[in-house]
Length: 391
Image (cartoon, rainbow, N blue to C red; front, side, top):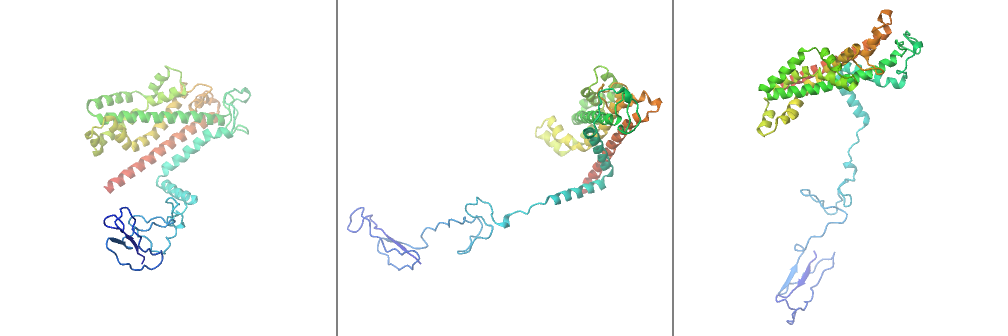
């Protein structure tokens, strides 16, 4: 054991009494050799190994963290442990996370999708039909090129044949190409009108149900009055005021379709406004808009999502009705209802290929949205039933 001796004088003077004189140093033991005991002289302080300051840590090993025992002397740090210069990263193989194989993620997603498909066959069938129709309408024209602007008098009313799989109409336009282009307008206008109607109806019903009292009575009497007016009649009156373009048709169809959604959401709001989290908003001084937008509408989202699917199907039917009556999109634009209107003028001549394709397309899309809505409603009921049983 090594010992270092430092001799000092109590009065701060060296031998002989001269102030500031440095006393002779005691014997120092070289590092690594055994110390020789030196008796302490009067006024001499002996620093032993227990009183010496600790040695600094090694330059290549970081100090142990709090609560972690330091490794014994002469023992190397564990493999993968942090070393100085690595900035906290674990360079060892023990710290490396195992990579996730893309195939396992895909297989898990496929298994989950297959389980959902078996649980909700109606919704699955509806989604498949809608995806197929959307691909047919939007990707089809990229592969099957036709001219839907000019009139071809020499190709009028041709039956299905090579070059025209579904024949031609009275203007000589290819029916298959026209079915694709018309489907784009029908799907876009119907989807936009259905979503807009759901938004308007949800806000109206949520406000009426949350407010209650006289405001609820007035708002719902307006809804009842609007429901009493036939949708097609109201749409005809509105469309006759302005030229029916696609944005105008979206607004017209939505303005005549949101009333049913308002009544459904109002019933949900009446049940939700007495819940604890809605009452807590009132107690903490939150406004009515916060309660409606942050609590009532999100908790009624299941009912709204189911209603949106029915709204889109109804909007497509309403658009087809307006186009059949000549108040839909104007030429050269076309939709499925416009195709039926044009084919009806020559239906007595037996040109079935002009009216059957758009009629079947409308029927398939509306049935698909209905199946999707039924599947979502069944799933919502099952989820509510399991939640209630758990409680």
